[in-house]
Amino acid sequence: MEILEAIKTRRSVRSYAKTSIPPISISRMMKALRFAPSACNNQPWHFIWVQNEETKRQLAATAGHKEWLAEPPYIVVACGYPALAYPSMGGHGNSVDIDVAIAMDHLTLAAVGEGLGTCWIGAFNDAAVRQLLAIPPEVKVVAMSPVGFPSSPDLIRPITENERKPTKEIISVLKTGYAVHISRMSASGRYLFVIGRDAKVNMIDMWMEKPDTVAEIRTGLEARSVESSKFKGFEDKYAIAGTYWPPQFVIMDGDTLEPLKIVSTRGNVVGTQEYHPEPRVASIVGSHFKPEFVVNVKETGKTLMVDYSDLKALKMTEIGSAPFLHDGGLDSTKRYFMVAANNSNKISVFDLKEDKLAAIVDVGKIPHPGRGANFTHPKFGPVWATGHLGDETISLIGTDPKKNKQYAFKEVAKLTGPGGGALFIKSHPKSNHLYSDAPLNPDPKISQSVVVYDIKNLEKGYVTLPIAEWADIKDDGAKRVVQPEFNKAGDEVWFSVWSAKNKISAMVIVDDKTLKLKKVIKDPRLITPTGHFNVHNTQHDVY
Picture 1 (cartoon, rainbow, N blue to C red):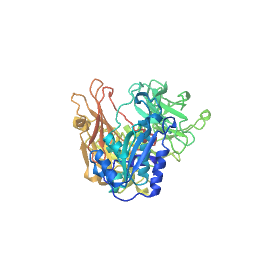
Picture 2 (cartoon, helix red, strand yellow):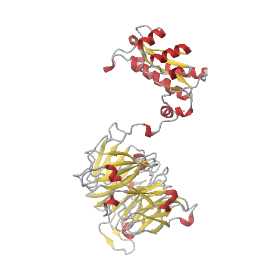
Picture 3 (cartoon, helix red, strand yellow):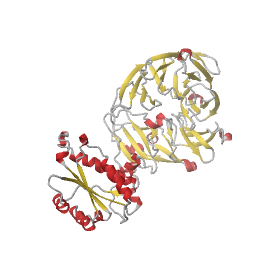
Picture 4 (spheres, helix red, strand yellow):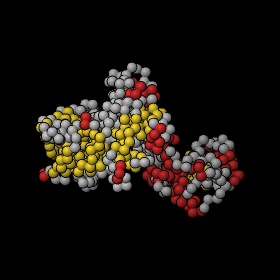
């Protein structure tokens, strides 16, 4: 059993079988005790393995008559010698309590590995235990625990996340650029890159005890996109930022953000061939198939496959599709990139393995997918979904040209939502749900809630979750609900409840299985929250 699994499986067992313990198991548990660390390796402990039935019953009486203590074959009494312990341990005096506790923890984990249960007992009549076991005054009785097979296997099942206090708290607030637009993780997961609308890029080291900015740069005057290199052999080597003004992208050193290459995006519009003096870089993704950045230029409708393998001889493959390229994401295989040409009412699909346009798909009015949502449709197989700013529909596009060729890169279905104004849509490989927001809808009832679809039964329509109502904010702020974002496990979904700077905002967390409220986070430092990104899912392009 892996150590983390043993830690999760260790429980306080209070009902035991009379089954004897194999000698080999006893031997391994005793070794676990002996090999425990202690201050200066003094090992100031002594463990009494009580097996006598009458003595076990009397020990149970010293601990408040807990009869179940006497059920298993053994009660282990953990003792320590203060005179042998390290004499100075800060506010703890000598080290005896800590040393014995560490050894006892080794015992409980070793017991799990043997299929056994234990239960720490710290409340007992010290004088009675001493008299019963003839323990001399210079020895300290620290704790005791029964050791035996649980009466039911369910008593040592692994602990779930829901059985532990959540770690959902703000641990750090960092100064970054103005109105941070997106966050992207480096391939290794060490660095978080954020970019403000003022084109300021912060590189934050997530492996520091307290994450903090380790490098920053302004790549222009206005911007929206940042990304890092992900192809094997180039992990974390480069970062890239695309700007609105000047119309350009900047490739930077992945360790320092030193600018290494600046490339203008001025050029001619797809179709009309009209020259455009300031086409903005709308979004960027890192390819998993080649050492390339996929740079989407908004007004000209061009996607640039930027080969970063040799910056001194930079190569770019220019692929035209449709004007007004905006945001998008990868399909579930990460081979195909789906990007919204929002004012063209289309989704452009690019094959990142072959560096070519795979399709242009007509969808609803002004698609805005964020990164979109991938899931397996009961009929059409793998699909990618986008919501729309301009109408109430959600478009599903087939993404499997191998096993579902007849549906590949076609709009295979439309779902009906409550109204337009959608910005983000999300699912997760371990979820059966599809979530869609609508923060820009003019109706507060719609903008303050989200809708959820059952992927296995899309025909029944959506259910509405009153996220803003659950946040229980009493002021008159807008309380727009923005961006569903799953945790790594795929069992909870986070939402921003956005209000103006001078109003109260919040984060709301929902249990994906039950669709019930799980947690509300309110904090004066939580100001105008919009995009929020799970570190693991962002690092691995899970959406």
